[in-house]
Length: 133
Image 1: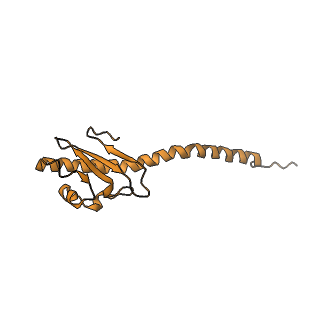
Image 2: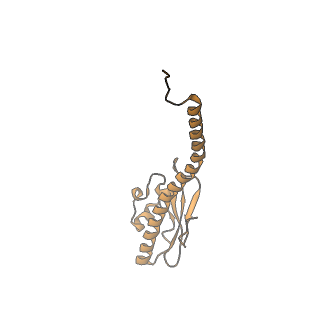
Image 3: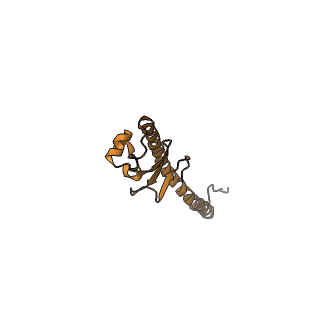
């Protein structure tokens, strides 16, 4: 009576491990770009909220000059109705947001620069036309 063995050989197992390793090596760089993109989406959402607050402030007062500056300034925060906690997220803090210009129609240009250790590097700007550069 012959016994038949069931299972995988060592070579087959090593081939499977090699394939999984190659797939992991290819996927990790792709995922790194997605992580930074997700971090910048937090900044984009908060910059949009800041832009909406600037439009409301401009509509109520007609003033587009006294709200230019960084949003860690208590005076600007008060005018726009924010507190520091409102602008602090996982990757960006209130001081990372700067209103660089306000158009004659009340549309703000907001520049975001990450300063926290886990923030993505560089800076991006929410332009007047709504593009994220």
